[in-house]
Length: 334
Image (tube, rainbow, N blue to C red; front, top):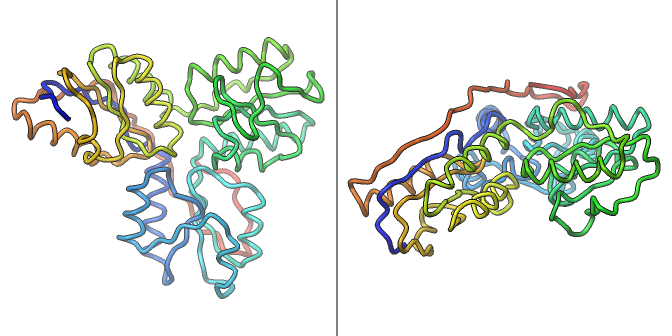
């Protein structure tokens, strides 16, 4: 960092969304209530700092494969499903292992799962738009109806397991529905859906958008602030889909855009000539990490002007309840 920053514009909203708040609180409360160390399937949210704090402060264990728990005594142990959702196969395996479960899936992801089951029952092929076939949300959603689901890469995204929207083939063009990962670029998703609709006129597009409100709101605010600043900083872990989409958008709209995990990353940035900086953060980034960046700038310039632009969200999701291994599994919440 080699420039004296004079002005910082903080985006509102930024940082934790309602789904992330719900999921983290569920883990913290369960960790305090459980007699044994709590286990979470996959990172509860995609942020390294959040995961490390839960490990250190609450003794939480994170696993990517339930088979690692097979050595545990049957019954009495609890596993939390991450905010990204899991497939029915994971739920079944947890039950087979005698685990109690706490489903911290974001209700907006649960909605997409519900749509996948509904359309699969009705005989539709599901075109699931995602940015990676390996993203946990895509894995969980496609797992609801694997034989009926084709994963389509959002415009510009290619890779193993992703079909190109321009060339994807379907078994019946008259029984087709599109669903999406909730954390994609709003613009790229709309373009991808438009391509599919042009190729398959009978394609059903659910009336309520699957892209979550938090993803859209954060992108809208980056879009509004970026033209006002010389550089844009996005605090996000690399495996946060919504955070990386914010970074891509900022890079499209601003002369310079940089990703930071924490304020320590400022030392490696070239901010020469930069006077005004915009800052936003992924829906899984703690806001104290943003404030630490602001304080680093203020340490260089005590007269730093800091403003916040936009509106905070006022949405809450109720915390999920623990379900014993013999109890019926709830399929909706929120």
